[in-house]
Amino acid sequence: MSRPTQELLAAWEAAEARLYPVAMTRPEVYARALRLVQEIVTELAPYGDVERLAEAFEDAVEISVRAIERSGVSTHGVDVGLAASAAFAMRYRAIVASDARREALDRIREAREHGPAWVTVAESGDMTVGPYVRLEMHLPDGQAVQVSIDFDAESGERRFRVEPMSLDPLTGERRDGVSTVAPQTFLDTEGWEAAIAGLRSAIEGSSG
View 1 (cartoon, rainbow, N blue to C red):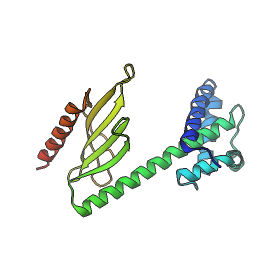
View 2 (cartoon, rainbow, N blue to C red):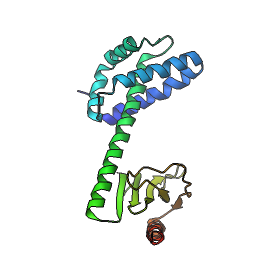
View 3 (tube, rainbow, N blue to C red):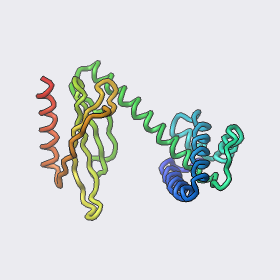
View 4 (cartoon, helix red, strand yellow):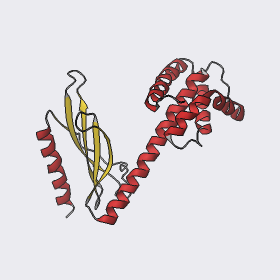
């Protein structure tokens, strides 16, 4: 039985954090480490969801061997175990990003079919305690509002943020080359909620 996904992810990212700083002290080893990670990621392409990827980690040694034999990459000076974990971390992020894009497209399509002017493109976390992030898009023009709750690094107290963004109205992806305004930060929900409402109203007004 595979370990819980979040436990595995923490282990993968910890290995990733150890691999590159060590390899960077020797450029040739760093280059070999990068290539090995990419070759292992290629072997992980058939695992298209997080659950299957977690299960596949039980066969990480065999997968790494296949990648090495197929590509002929040199592993001299490279910790293959760390490279394998780094590859799993990279593949995990790719799967999550792909799932998020697909979910955003589904939400946008459904909103266009049923008529609301605003659609929640993405949402994660717990709004009652934080951390929390929600991205809402105005369908007619792609203008968006990102609201979030995180914690102050020193005090540990919650911080409430709101930030305008510009997205592609068809895909919900952030537009390249569009300048953004710095997020507003609040210490309580009252000012935060008022800022969210004000920004949404301004976007609706500007779209005519």
